[in-house]
Amino acid sequence: MSAALELRRSIETCELQHAAFSEHLKLLKRRADDALAGYAPRLECVLGPSRVGKTMLINALERAYPSSKVDGVRSVPVLTVPVSPSISPLLLPMSVLTALGVPLPQRGITSGVMFNRMADQLRLAGTRVLLFEEASHLVEPGARLPPRAAGDWFKSVLENLGITVMLFGVPRLERLFASNEQLRLRASARREFRPYNFQSVEEQRAFASCVLTYAGLFQQSGWPIDVPRDLLVKHCYLLSGGLVGVLSRFMQELACQMAYETPRTLTFDDCATTVKLIESAGHPHCPAFARETVSAIELNQAHAHVLEINDMPMRRVVS
Image 1 (tube, rainbow, N blue to C red):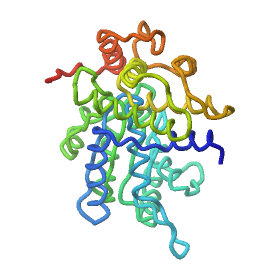
Image 2: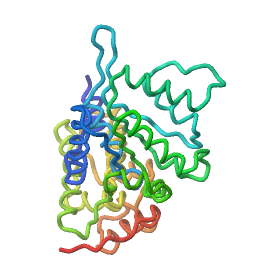
Image 3: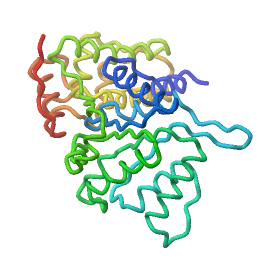
């Protein structure tokens, strides 16, 4: 394997061990362990803006509880189900069957019959936990399933099938619980996965740890980044506004740009070129890697912009 290919793969598969990620993963794994041990099902919800790291959580859970096949029988203890836009009462159980890799029944089947088929297949696969990715599609204007009806559907999965449900979505997913008090009272407290706030010393260090983890992978592969650590961290924050998913995307693209080069030292200009190839989450008037100096005001504007476009309130920081 070439050094460039090895670098790209190490960046893409890197599991950042930062504080917020570890805290959420620990709790969700505890819930999954309880479900697999036969305890009462739980309903968990993780809210956060796009690119905050929710997909990383889902991937980590999938790796912790992989599917297997014994004597020709497939076991899927934890199943990830993507929720599509314009979801309907029929498409929701169909999404579960598709995620299981089960052939879909013929057309004309009712949503009730489809639910029963889904229940049978989940039982055969030994599935005890369902992870619904992009669950906020359930409360978007184009959804063909009213939020209250969607809440009743998840309540049936919990109570009739005894399966733990974990919902991942952007903050507007809260509307699902606001529209169905029975679902809300059965759920655990919603968990917020927020972008890192540079005004907090603790969160600043956590974000810096993520940046330096990636920088270390470049160093080990022969591509050291010749940008002072403090400056590299600040520019990565300008780019991401504290969203580790955007940071990850930047590092992946930087590694991709090295695919046809021999190992060498990467410069500030290399970073500036890479930034132009991805979408920034920070404030448009404060672009990353445009100039070497970064002010505290620019860092705060990047964070505030991410919160604003995701309809999230500012959180008071106690130093």
